[in-house]
Length: 129
Image (cartoon, rainbow, N blue to C red; front, top):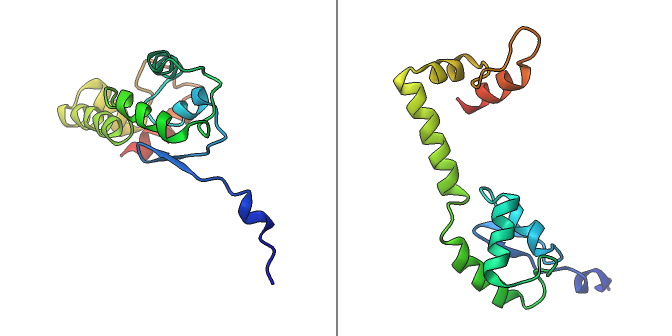
């Protein structure tokens, strides 16, 4: 006979724009887990919904999720945001602009020094290729 005590405590995962969120997350933190939603955007979405930022996703879950999906439809998030960023990088690479050349070489793009630092940019820019 198995012990079912753990099965009763399992929370249902909430999916919002393809992102798995725990119902115990507060609304202000759950929105930040979505790619493309910053702290300010999270606060503005909560203000539009008229909810408290400390509301948990588990409270009236279906009502909150439906209203969040409706509001987030106006924002560019997740796959659309990633595709746009990728297209911008590909455009720079194709044009052969200064920025594109720096991206291709794995060097810092925004004027940072390379004499002593630049390892982080090299790691990030090479990963993008």
